[in-house]
Amino acid sequence: MKFRIEKELEKTGERERLLDVLRARLIECGWRDVMKDLVKKEADARGIDNIDLEQLAFQLFEQARDAVPEEVKIELMGKLKAFADKVVS
Image (cartoon, rainbow, N blue to C red):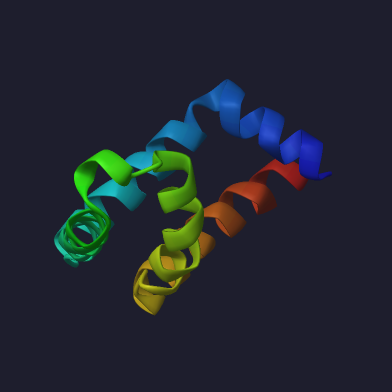
């Protein structure tokens, strides 16, 4: 069933629409600015020449995920569930 939903998300373009909604909500709530500040602080602390982007992304992943406001998570999960319900019915 998961594969079927993922396939339909791609086929219908819903995946991109959901990503667009997510991007917009993250910008609106200030999440993007918070992440920029966090990355800047790490770059300043380590020195720009000593930054490994892959390592930095791994290090900040959980903080970034945890910083997404609950209302954004709930909204996106609701949209995804509604789409999945249509696909499986």
